[in-house]
Image 1 (cartoon, rainbow, N blue to C red):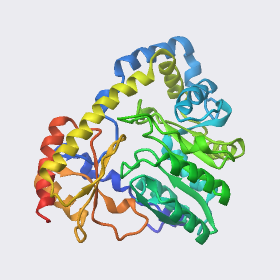
Image 2: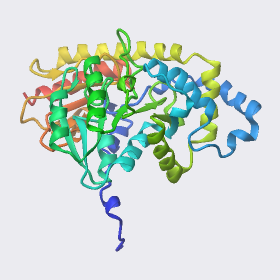
Image 3: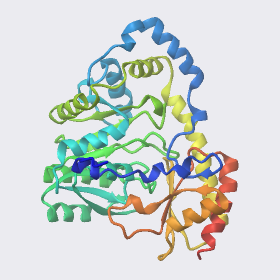
Image 4: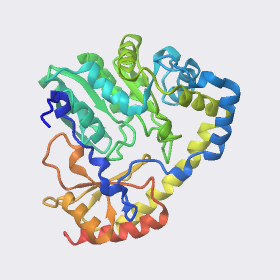
Length: 393
């Protein structure tokens, strides 16, 4: 068929984290960055469903406000933003269909063709793909063990005066698991204000911290209104409800609300009411503490098996939260080849690291997720994957 697609449509690419082999029922998958469905509060949600019908009736099935029901936005402001160190009210919150929609809206709102987006390098491949449709130039900023290098960030802000956005995942970053230091968070907020560049702070993992206290968000240091905070219930509650949010100053938030209205009118009224009912009836913090214990144990087990089964030369991160461990192999090894061999010979899969970089020269990295695999799968799968990797050394 001779179909004349738009230039934006031609920029669409399949996600590297949605590879069909990852869903093969016969594999052990360290690829999926998703919560364990066995940890969902299913029994409590059964009661919540009944309560919604009894208390809200037909209203739960009707259209509602584009920015989201005020009760839910108030809960987010008073609970989720408070733990992030941000003092706001419902008027600073608008709902999105997961944080992913907020990421896509950010590019739509701020970026013209040829503009620059500065990101950590590596960064979340789903964000890089969403940005690509708007044809920007994505420029990576090198990271060290406490986040992106602020000196390099400022150098690139000066080098690229058409920078329209800085995108960051400061807490247990996807894919590396690295957490940005408090000092760098302060500096990042300062640089955004100094150069008048919006900072999109993507924070799906902030609550999933294993030791110590959660760091204050970059938004908490935002004195001039240049930081946009993207939050989500997907990793700590129920991802299928697709409830995320944007927290921003009024002038910026208005654009997100209009983008939402033009895209899909609103989030599901039913899903919003279900979330409200759960948050009012049950203790989300208690649920988060429960799932953190499970994920921490899996992280520890995976780290133990890396030490036991992988070559000693391999470098890897030790995340203090989130879902991911990042492996750096020696130069010259292509993680895509290892994936192919591991899938064919051992039925173990993972996400090669190349798609997380703004350039194409990085092939010797692997992202491992421990969130949705059980102990038996970690023990068996890491032994098999370690054997495949060791054959390349």
